[in-house]
Image (cartoon, helix red, strand yellow):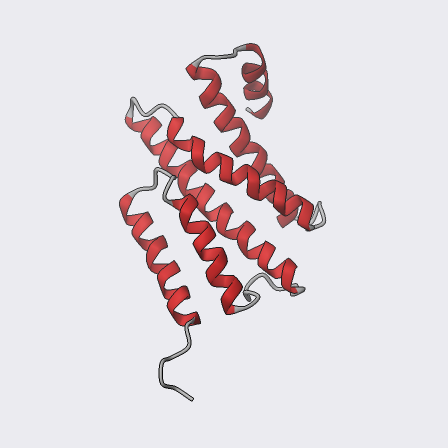
Length: 156
């Protein structure tokens, strides 16, 4: 499918099909790249993470351009939006771990950088055409992480 979409995006320029096929192509490219990182086929470094981050940011802005004329297309757009949000969280977490020197992506670097990255993520999640229930879940998780990083007032 990746090769077919590559061919379509090269042959057809300036039409709706080209825009949507380019979105699918970019999504598949990011998916393959993250799969390689997960399977340790590629080394995680700041260059790859910055490239993935910029690709995901661009994808967040373009997922809404996918056609939604049928229920299947709406479902496809929603699934790509949800996975793009998951991939963005993963890349932000990996960037935080790499910048702090930690090897375990389950631990964020510091509370200050975690809230900064959550703010960075939230501005892109708004642009994604996410289903309402999923968006509320994401915002609830981000709010919980942000509030847990705040020091308690009056505690010593």
